[in-house]
Length: 168
Image (cartoon, rainbow, N blue to C red):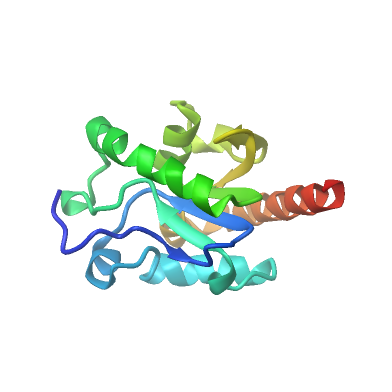
């Protein structure tokens, strides 16, 4: 893996929401923090739209290092990093996981379905924690027409979170 530094995650260690992406990009590698480039700015806007500040959530990636030339992560790279991510989930113990992007969704759900089939519904991972899948902000920058679907996913995440709070 080509990297300047590992990018482990950032945010509130007591966060009720955890956002999980795929892997750090060039900006993230330089700054040692996930989602800091244009995609990160869009993610911040998405969170703000549902009343969350970036500082309130915990943001992590499946891969802790940037793959060369931003290629898709190899299965062995994912296998090396997944135990660390699941430990992060356990330690932070979020009430809801928001999974952004195809690779992260397919990895966490052990599925090869396209993201269009994985989004829009409630999944459960890591000891039955609720997870909502949506498009990666970088994809939304390239395909702004999908932002409406992503907004629907965010609203589903809010409804899921609210129903958990009501039930607890």
